[in-house]
Length: 55
Image (cartoon, rainbow, N blue to C red; front, side):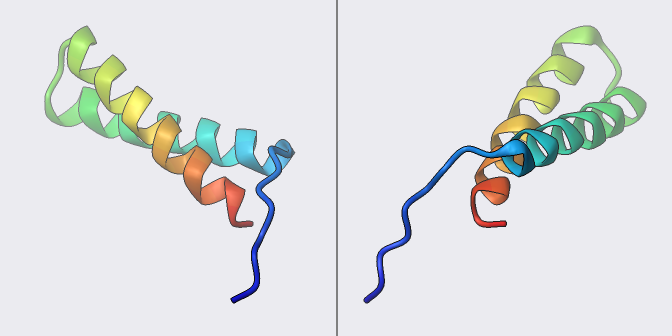
Protein backbone atom coordinates (compact mmCIF):
# COMPACT_ATOMS: atom_id res chain seq x y z
CA UNK A 1 0.00 0.00 0.00
CA UNK A 2 1.30 3.44 -0.89
CA UNK A 3 2.31 5.61 2.00
CA UNK A 4 1.39 9.26 2.01
CA UNK A 5 3.55 11.74 3.85
CA UNK A 6 1.46 14.32 5.69
CA UNK A 7 2.53 17.91 5.26
CA UNK A 8 0.94 20.92 6.91
CA UNK A 9 0.13 23.43 4.19
CA UNK A 10 -2.10 26.47 3.93
CA UNK A 11 -5.00 24.16 3.06
CA UNK A 12 -4.72 22.61 6.50
CA UNK A 13 -5.05 26.00 8.16
CA UNK A 14 -7.90 27.04 5.88
CA UNK A 15 -9.90 23.88 6.60
CA UNK A 16 -9.21 24.25 10.34
CA UNK A 17 -10.39 27.86 10.32
CA UNK A 18 -13.53 27.11 8.35
CA UNK A 19 -14.35 24.14 10.59
CA UNK A 20 -13.90 26.24 13.72
CA UNK A 21 -16.09 29.06 12.41
CA UNK A 22 -18.85 26.73 11.19
CA UNK A 23 -19.10 24.55 14.28
CA UNK A 24 -18.54 27.47 16.65
CA UNK A 25 -21.31 29.45 14.94
CA UNK A 26 -23.69 26.53 15.02
CA UNK A 27 -22.98 25.93 18.71
CA UNK A 28 -23.51 29.59 19.53
CA UNK A 29 -26.86 29.58 17.76
CA UNK A 30 -28.06 26.22 19.07
CA UNK A 31 -26.58 25.93 22.56
CA UNK A 32 -25.51 29.40 23.56
CA UNK A 33 -22.86 30.13 26.14
CA UNK A 34 -19.21 30.91 25.63
CA UNK A 35 -17.95 27.51 26.86
CA UNK A 36 -20.07 25.57 24.38
CA UNK A 37 -19.01 27.86 21.54
CA UNK A 38 -15.30 27.53 22.35
CA UNK A 39 -15.53 23.75 22.77
CA UNK A 40 -17.32 23.34 19.44
CA UNK A 41 -14.85 25.68 17.76
CA UNK A 42 -11.91 23.61 19.01
CA UNK A 43 -13.51 20.38 17.81
CA UNK A 44 -14.26 22.00 14.45
CA UNK A 45 -10.68 23.19 14.11
CA UNK A 46 -9.33 19.73 14.87
CA UNK A 47 -11.72 18.05 12.44
CA UNK A 48 -11.08 20.64 9.74
CA UNK A 49 -7.33 20.38 10.23
CA UNK A 50 -7.46 16.60 9.87
CA UNK A 51 -9.54 16.96 6.72
CA UNK A 52 -7.15 19.57 5.39
CA UNK A 53 -4.26 17.10 5.62
CA UNK A 54 -5.88 15.03 2.89
CA UNK A 55 -6.53 17.87 0.43
